[in-house]
Image (cartoon, rainbow, N blue to C red; front, side, top):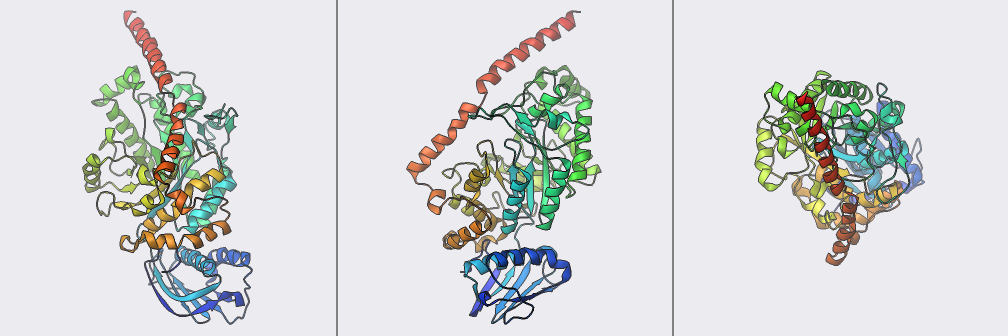
Length: 526
């Protein structure tokens, strides 16, 4: 066993150790200085001495034969040789060396390691729409996901409960839509947003850690915060508050107004200037059509385009947004929604979060027709869900190929939704050690995965987390709760239903339908 998470592609154990407590010298290509500095900062925290000349040598060498994200480490008596073909490969090699140094108390056994990732897309999503997480909090998560060799940070920037990114053409999105009067069981107001300079700082920091950043502007649903600032973007220009509670909202962007598409394009114009990594998530989930069904403009648009229903109108809307994103040299991602399957352009990547077994054939068919898919299944990839529901063992053991092996399945994503995760302490507890299990599944070959071996690595992994500022994490026992504890945990989790405005939706929908049906009748009588 080698004490590395994620498990490397191939390794062998040789005789001897390298004792870094005696100090070390290090040589490397100057263009890789930032990657080496990351390791050196860690070494200094362990009080390891770096010297120009030392008995122990670390030699970092550029080698074009190594795969782009891969690396090669050979540890022999008094020498550690590292080879990589890219800055990214070098960075991942140094993350492994950090972990080995701590795991073996600075006396590293002589290993030969050849490593490379299984999937090219290995992502973590932080929902900052419900609860705002500061720039420093986001940077802390960037440090931690880099440690796990994940290479994408997905920021869920807009929600019914808050709009978190500055759009200069629409200043009310942050002046008004970034604040809600209170949150669920908390009577205190909550708010916050990232200025464009904040975003640039976050993106630059992520790039130093070899992480690309995916912004999400969720549409046409999950837009009540935006509708609070700009009511005319909805079907009936209703005055709405920024949502205070969890749950699906029925007021969404109007699908029949041309000015709504113009608004979305304006937002995308500024988003592409802030996020240069070529991917934009446009949501597409949980968009009830109760307003569209009685909206004259939506119904006229359906007739104009020769569509069958409101779901096809959503597919058209998202396809138009996807085309605009493509025209700017970017690729759109959206959640898979079974009700609009096949209606959006096949060059939009699907993030599969809600795929009952009976719909697996549909996902396979989409991939056969050219669509790329990301495994983002809520079970087991949602880290905010109770440990009783997504246990550590379940996250580790469920196959990444949830349907079947396919080249169009490009990777995995783990998610931390934050409606019930209000601060970093809670976020850490929800995320770790589950992110370690997820990262190993995303990086390591399936045949290398062994849950029992993974558990044996947990003690040293916990020390690594502490060294990187994780103040709270679940024990293995807590992350795999007993049936009794699991029952009470799920019971506590389901208190969220008390925050869902289901009854309010029914009453509000009835009022809207009555009001605008009467208005339509009066207009017709005239």
